[in-house]
Amino acid sequence: MLCAEIMRRPTATIILPAMGCLSMLSASGLSAQQYPTKAVRLILPYAAGGGADIFARIIGQKLSVALGQQVIIDNRVGAGGNIGAAFAAKAAPDGYTLLFLPQPLAVNASLYSNLTFDLAKDFLPITLMGSTPLILIVHPSLPVRNLKELVALAKLRPGQLYYSSSGNGGSPHLAAHLFSSMAGINVVHVPHRGNTEATTGVLSGQTQFMFSPINAVAPQVKAGRLRALAITSAKRAAPAPELPTLAESGLPGYVVDVWYSAVAPAGTPREVIARLHAEILKVLNMPDVKEQVSSQGTELISCTPEELAAFLRAELAKWGKVVKETGVRID
Image (spheres, rainbow, N blue to C red):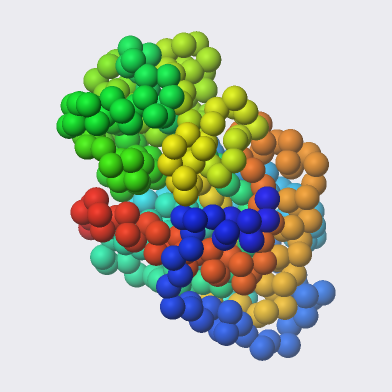
């Protein structure tokens, strides 16, 4: 998928004042041929073993070969990803410390009032790398087979349907809020400590539905313990091509993707950004990389730094609006 295609989506058209990040590119004399001369650290703001970590390690392994230097995945965990991002923001702008920037950090910009970094000022965009949709699932006892029936039931029983989430302010929570807001329904949020606990809430019947990463609930859906209604991406996903999108199911313009991108500290030389961009795109075009990540429900994305800058502005605006509507704050 091209980043330009993402920018044409109706949900990604709100643009903030320009970040000015592209103008901060250093006019260093360092050539792309000279870089790198030592190992490169890719800061991952999440724990090892999760979907983001698996994706980062697939990309990092191939990028090590492309750059001729080891790319070390450095897991810096805590505060919803903010600890890792703050560490990367303060790193030397020399191309040897990069940040694996996932979608939740764009949400955190509005969730937290005491952040020590600014996504719009402290980083230079390199490229989007991948996008993973969420899946809308319901308890099998709920008498609905598609999105329109769920919306109709919620309108018939306002305030009586409950949905699980992995926690306040997380992607599943805000995806559900965006859904309820666009559908004009009144449903009740039940936050949990993580996606596993949230899924258990639906499986037990404590809650009636939730939005979840597709791979996290695929076994339960296959076994019939959960029913899948729709996918949150702009188009149908390869792991579940039979599932319609929310947009084609009656909510035009609805798109929520948990995306992954690469950025560098502000001030990183333009030659280094260009080299990293070129090498990452080569990795993303490798057939074996596509095969590995598509099996996890992730779609690879190619993107210019300029397109990523515009995309990040749109995401900051979009999720800032959703966070404001929910009233959620985490400090």
